[in-house]
Length: 462
Image (cartoon, rainbow, N blue to C red; front, side, top):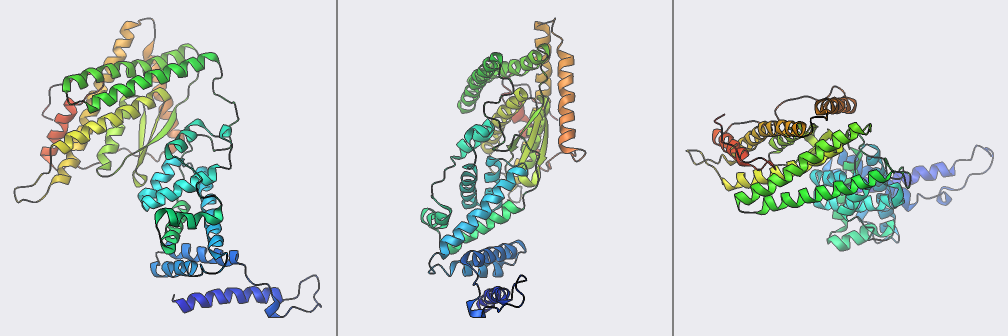
């Protein structure tokens, strides 16, 4: 569609409105009609809405030339008084509504920003952050879940531009974009938000939390939360030191102390809940699984989750995995997965680039195989470590019946997965192994990885 066609379409839209306005109303069929030149002209808002809708339609159908023509049409009338503000107001309104729709489809703020960045780029992620800030100012903080508020804080959401009318102009000034580039970003983001898959909802929608409500408002619950934060703070500090030190012995000592705290934290939670007759329920959180080598990384997360009485489900197309388990176990999975991934990347990069005997690069195959082997071997080690920890706790407190408690939790997690995903979950290895050196190197790295409480073991030949 050329420039003349665009102008002709807009003219036709105006003429249709003029004809409708010129027709006599049903309430006075015999009354005189107004001349066409006096008929109501389409407003700037209506024209802007047509332009945005046509641009979005063309982009969604992959008609890039038509898309750019509509972008030019929207940007080309900036000299008309009020036009830029009208387009800005319309786009922000559409984006805000789309963000609200994303919440209803199970998405959370951090996931939405990350998805926009993965699909389109950093500028789209920044605009998504702005639109989240805009949408969230409609809710009182007391009616928003704490997990939601924590994500907003991490994203540093802020309505910095003032009114909806000013947004596009302020964005151009901040980003140094042209009018066309700004419109492209906005319409592309609108398309991303309009094609989000539905995800299981992990926490209450913003605005629906009752102010002052708490799952356990008793004093014991407050003391328990304080103890949890203290223990988790110690674990995080120990893991950070273990990952940063250059001395193997120091890393092992720090990791050993971290594992002691982690194992006690998780098992004590299970026993205390059972003894108190408290019916804790499994929860879920979604963790990013980024390229490159996302398959082996998802496999590593699955192994860590399984060893900690959780289940992991990989959303391959979205670059993240859902982990389902009890809250204390979910904390352990996230901390351990993050730490092991750091250690794996460090060991993999230390191995350097690889070439075959003909000088061709085989670095990607080596690293893919390295990480897959690392994940599988870590799973084997974690399974043994989990069994050791459970036997130790049982031996130290013979009067506490641990096995039925853990078995009941396993079943509760399986039931939660079935309820959340039905029969749609499939099980298979998430990566391909094609480099033997990478396989054996990954296995060796897994044997020396700090499992937060267990010293390195002798390597096996697989």
